[in-house]
Amino acid sequence: MDHLLKRILNAVEVGSLTLELQVNDCKLFLQLYPLQNPLEVVLGDGHKLSAVTQGTVKVLMKYGRQGSQLSYNVLSVSKAVERGNSVKFGKSSCNIRDPNHRPIAVAEKIGGLYQVNTTPVYINSATSCQETTKEDISHYRFEHLNVRSLQKLAKENLVDDFDFTPTYEIQFCESCLEGKQHRSTFPSHFETRAKEPLELVHTA
Image (cartoon, rainbow, N blue to C red; front, side):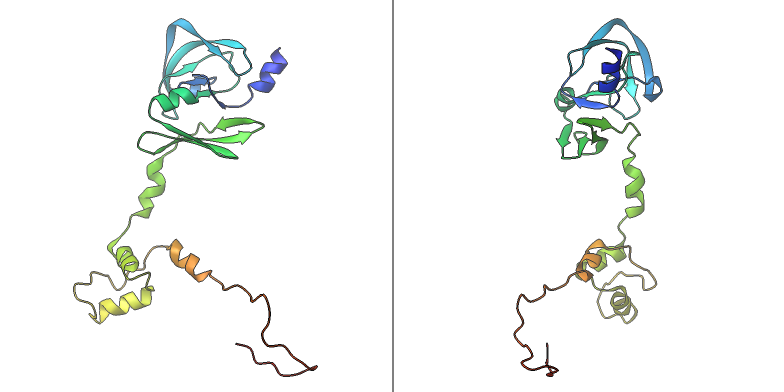
């Protein structure tokens, strides 16, 4: 029985239990207090455990419950959806977002279960360095014109009310990079072929 539980409960499972999060590690809680009446937790294989404490978990999902017998963390999809969150399952991962579409957690599929990464998701850390400047906006408005040409427009006052700092370098532009990677397909057949050995062939 213990061996079976350890094999089943060795990961964080996104299940159809009850976003209530059943957690096995007290360190993941921001706040934790005992329950007056322990709550019964039914696992996917039918086994029952008791949740003895309740609090707020570091992944910012409220109503997490802690049970010392748990060997892994259980996330309830039905409760997550009831509270307005969205849960999207993919072939290899599951994304959980709050009602404002901000990421809450990501679960990776491992051995038939979805393991939730309990590291907090800081949504501002990635977006803080991606602030769009007026120079970037000018780059987009001029249909991704290169920096040198934009600087020339600004230096020589070729455009009225053109607010662009000539010394400024625009940020990395993924669309420009993708555009430079374009290559026409090779022709499926050749229109010009040599008819004799070493014959000169003119190609386009």
